[in-house]
Every structure is written in structure tokens, then in C-alpha cells.
Image (cartoon, rainbow, N blue to C red):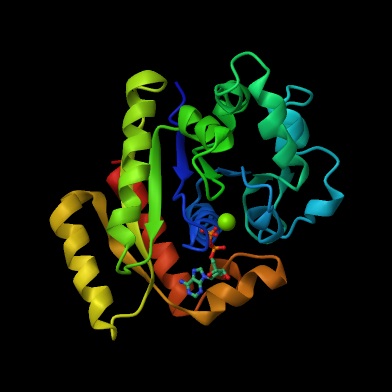
Length: 256
Ligand code: ADP
Ligand code: MG
């Protein structure tokens, strides 16, 4: 029996730390000896580039997999420094959104494709685009759970309600396994009173669903993608890298 866990990293807002969370959690889990596949489901291809794979040079990508012209095993590549595999994306993926609408099982394509490599991984982490689109729906249909990175800003809670409603709908109609694994506070600056207040509100509202680990704002995490690797491997001694390794431990521990 496979113990594979498939998680979407999702938040319909852009720039909230989805990709940073995906690649660093992947690298953290890899350091703990877990076998990890990152699926880049964003046409921007940031998780691909941030894992050290040139999105412009992909022979096969998630696009070919969603259109059933390639398998995951054919299209994946190894992140040179990250210690995990990547199913890469580039701008071509934006077209899939339109092409998929016409096709059968359009929201279940990723789920079907991942079944082919289920024995080879302990974790699949899906980096979602900043929209509740058909691509994100493919992620949510394939996943056991959702990890939601968020900044502790004034409108953060308000923005969450759309995502929470979408997750409820997918849970009810398409994927009864789907649940929120947890909310991850990212780019956190404890010196800012507002962030502490929003953090307390989050805990009051979501309780146990808020991860204990907090990811601080840390420039090394922002610099790492331009070196083609996650912060966790780029500068292991940095506060950001240490926080993500701690987060990987928490994820493993929560799953028991
Ligand atoms: P998303 O995938 O949600 O659009 P990203 O992960 O790309 O968000 O993050 C947006 C920007 O913020 C990027 O430039 C990234 O390097 C930076 N960033 C993300 N997390 C942190 C952090 N903890 N500290 C500093 N910069 C961060
Ligand atoms: Mg992103």
C-alpha cells in the first residue's frame, strides 16, 4: 500500500509565498529522507526555475501530461540541488486551461497522471497558480490536503474565505478526501504589531489548523531562486532555511 501524501500549496492571491513554500518544503522533506515530487501548476514556472530547471528548455512538461501526451515518469526532471523531482511548467501551460475545457475528465487529469508514480514518492507538492482556475481545480482534485501560506496582513482573513469555500465545494462534489492540512504564516515580522494581531486572530479562528512553525521574512529565501535552488540548500544556516526544515518536521509529525 502506498503512503503517498499529495498536498496542494494554494492561495488565490499572488506573491503570498506559495512557490517559496513549495520548493523549500520539498527540500526540507528531502533532507529528512523523504522522496518528493514537486508539480509546477503555474504557467509562470517559478517553482521550475527555483528548483534549478530551465523552463524554456523543457522537452516535456506538465502541459503534455495534462493533455495525456506524456506520462509523469517521462516528463519529470531532478532538481540538481534540491534533492527532489520536478514536473516542470512554462507559458505553454496557460494554453492548457483553454484546451482542457473541451476535454473529458478535465478536472481529474492530474490525479490520473499521478497514479502512475504513486509508489515512487512519499510526498507530492503541487504549486498552484494564483487563481481558482481549472488548473488549481486539477490540483485540488488530485490532493489529500491543502497547505495555505499566508501573510499576516489586514485583509488576509477576508481573502481566505473564497479559498475555504472552494475547498468545501471540491470536498463535497469532486474529492471527498480533500481537507485543509494547515495555514502557514510566512514572511512574518514579529516586530510589526499588526502581524502579531492577525496571527492571534488566525489562531482564534482556525485553532489547530494553524501550523506551529512560523516562516520569518528572510532575504536569503528571496535570493535563492536566482541561484536555481531552494533557500534550504542555498544557505542552510539562514533563519529562513532553518524555519522551513522545522516546518518539514512539523508536516511529517502531524501525519503521524
Ligand atoms: P507566490 O508563489 O504566492 O506568488 P512567492 O513564493 O513567489 O509567492 O513569493 C513572492 C515573493 O516574496 C518572491 O520574490 C519571494 O522570493 C519572496 N518571499 C517569499 N517568502 C519570503 C520570505 N519568507 N522572506 C522574504 N522573501 C520572501
Ligand atoms: Mg508562485
